[in-house]
Image (tube, rainbow, N blue to C red):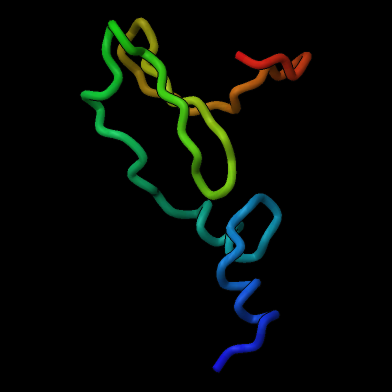
Length: 76
C-alpha cells in the first residue's frame, strides 16, 4: 500500500507538480482535427489541470494557448 504522500505525488498533475511536469513531456490526444472547422475554429479544453484553447488558424494550422491575453490576462 502506498502512503498518502506517495499517492499525492502520483495523482496530482497540475502545473509545478512532479507528475504534472513528467506528463507535460508527452503528447496527449485532446480533440479530433475534424472538431475544428470554419464554423467552430476554437475549442475550450482542460488538460492536466489547465484551462486552454485549441484553435485552427485561417491558414489551417492548429494551436493551443492559454485562454487569456498574454499582456493583460483578459479572457479571450
